[in-house]
Length: 164
Image (cartoon, rainbow, N blue to C red):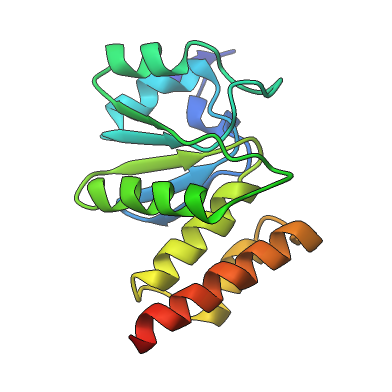
């Protein structure tokens, strides 16, 4: 699906903030503007996982309903940027496991929460090592003390899981 503008064709998807394609089945970004939802569907995305709380000024209030109308499953996991939790990561991991065979888009406000969670998930699943996971996060941001502590804590848990 393309948008016409002054005789020039361009994709609406280019307006998605901090878009990052991980692989053919997984993309991440900041907020997805509502005008891009139809193109997501046309591009074959089957699932959208949203880590941005509805209380955020950047949240799209009709996202769930709009995506459902397009046949896209919507998973809402509100992650408080000031207090990410292991429970949030577990909910995210369960959503990613459920969507593992589906073309999935994961977003938050700026792709910061998402790159942290996605890199940890891909590391947990053996698709990335620590250096690759760190590089994925670094493409988008430098985590503050809260997020650095959270990431380290989840990684420590991943190491314990592998040792069991």
